[in-house]
Image (cartoon, rainbow, N blue to C red):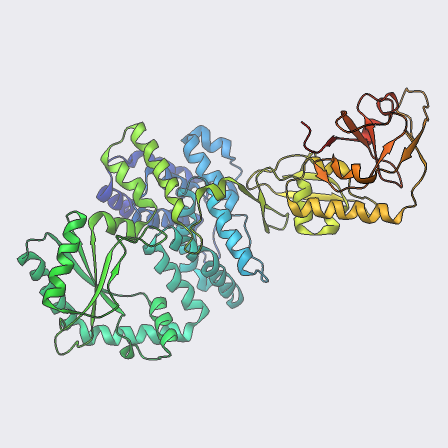
Length: 578
């Protein structure tokens, strides 16, 4: 009986000598045994899904750990094996990839998502993954899911296709993985607009038969041309993918592909350096007339995702049966690898030039650094990801917060009432302090009480401007509603095993001096100064949260303050005094 791994091993041998077939075999056998009996909606075994995911990844020429993680990526969901179990069997690198895949798998797109939320989801994937091989596994996993989508209900087909088009296609595009992007686009298009998809497919089939001879003739002419001029390389022709043709038709208000000219492209890949590409483009323009405005220099000015190539459109090359202008793309073999495999090509080139640990480490650093050119709109930098975290609500929705944000920041980002009524927070089901600093990928649950209210001390640790504003607004409203009192009690409830201690502390209006007081890291809160110690400007001070009045400011060494309830103490200082 033929081994299910035969085709996978064959693909691997074509691009790498550093991947152990024995390791891949061992991982597959473990996954096959662990997933025995588990089936997908299509009726096929889950083991077939993970194998197909690995095969798709092999097209990108990924490394050994990525293939191993792909074969194991469904183990945590379907079995009792934990990440620690996988680490013991297959090592920390593979286990980390599986764990990261499981984490990003918790993301859900809700039906009312706006573009800003979609953008946050995309950024979250990139930020959370840290190792972009996880994103590649997710893209391959999604492709195979789409290939078996016809087994689901019509509503689920459209939901998954729309989610893929809004989240995963832009990610593949930003990473420059065009070979996956075009596959994802066409698979989604088939379910989102089946009538138009079939229409264009039929037109392409008819056109392909009609123009096959002329396309072959054009390819032969260019192959001879580059050889005659001393260039070494290959020439191939291709129709553009179905969805991109649909977009061109829609943009130009056309319905027939006979009415548009740029659905076919000729690709020249030279085994040489960059100056040779410009020499060749010069020879082509001398021989055939270039179409004005259609020359694109993506080498001198690469696309935001790093794509590099020369594009031109020439007239007069095609025979009488193919009179349309012909688009030609010219690139080096390295540029072609980058165009097809995007971010994955950086790993590939380093991996094939040497298998030392230092070489692999440099490759990984380069791979991550290439995130610097992801966003076509504002040149998103890697620093952005380092300054942001992405956490989940219990329902799987994503919240984009600054690094150092706390459960209080999270609660206010969901809704003002959730922040105001917050009394406790749980991370993955475990209670944490409200000042806890959240991490990427954590699931945050907020516990509330009906009669709860914000605490001024929250201002000393919350990170977001929104949370600070809402806390300050609450207390300003609160103090304005209360009648000012001439005295306050230092303590209303004695601590356990402590004498009852009630002292009267007359206060005086703060006047303009109050504008110089910072309480809990914030200026502008209502304060009064205690008469018991009469704090003066530049003296060390501390705050006391009173009931039904402003915050009372004491000297830090005040005896009355020191004997008051510590739970109501809050940090205070003078502005511009260190």
